Length: 277
Image (tube, rainbow, N blue to C red; front, side, top):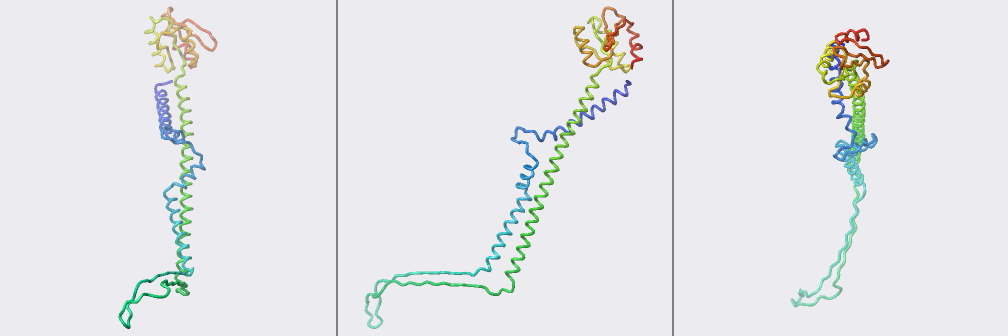
């Protein structure tokens, strides 16, 4: 593996990681947060939007106003009926017009009156009928506005709903690609086992030479038992384990799949690995 290929892999990994970061906030919209939000179905989201969107509320107000105006216009055809009733009582004295003397009132002091009036407008030149038609047209426009507002709210909710689903799927796909890329990056062709800590400088120099040659090489960062190091090599998927220990400047090269091993000079490790790459 050349230096250029490693740079290309790093760039690809960065792009995938960036896709995960950009898609994650959208994918998390469906999760319940600390603000009391809760997941809703598509049907429930559409009903909520149709009930609470400003355009839908305004359209319903126009429809109610048109209905009230229609009832008022129809009421103009109903005759006006007025019923009135009254009563009064008089008492005391009055001046006699003939002799100028005060005389007491006589007779029934109570008086009554009542009335009934009926008013019907027979002809208005079609004014009321035209008003009813105008109001009906306004009501039709209000109905269309309500339907349009509901449709727009439904469309917007569906677009956002499916965009959130697509973002979640994109986030999952990007995360899967990132995990696969990280798994490939963590994989090693060669694992250098440091059997003697005193030989760590020589082992690190060998690791650097192998990496410069394009071999994906890993090694223990801290002192560890040999068995644990071989276990780590198998977990990383390494094909070859190079053991650096008391035999230096010779090392043991072990094929992990077949358990075959050979003792060769440290300078010959790269040449030994080259045919299998």
